[in-house]
Length: 168
Image 1 (cartoon, rainbow, N blue to C red):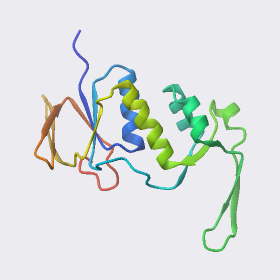
Image 2: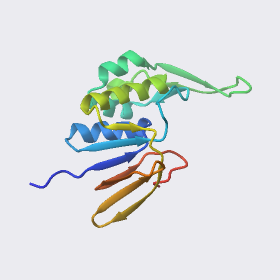
Image 3: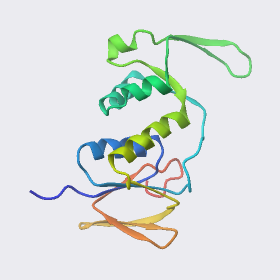
């Protein structure tokens, strides 16, 4: 049986870390690269809908989600500059309807939960301070180029590097 393909992921945000964890749990060799020298508290409060929460629970993160998140009930959405009510959303039935609750949490807490889970699966999976400057792809695989001069070979390249993606 052939070895599983080596997967390079550019970006250690929520998407990149979730992809890495899912792949690691299935036995794929994964390396995640992020340009930041350290993953720090960025962002604000976010919502994880039931479909996303179900995926994270299936990845073994249910208890951690319950620790860092608040299960949403009724959410009153308002216009930011007038306090006018936009609409009311009721998420209290999400768990029974969709198989997982709807959560609210701080983005940094979610990212840290994912980072820890990836490192438990493979302590060497995340490399920080690695700014991707481009890549070459061929039938033989892919080579990611980094600002520090390193060139790293893999079989698959996943771009999870945000709105200004070099990989996209």
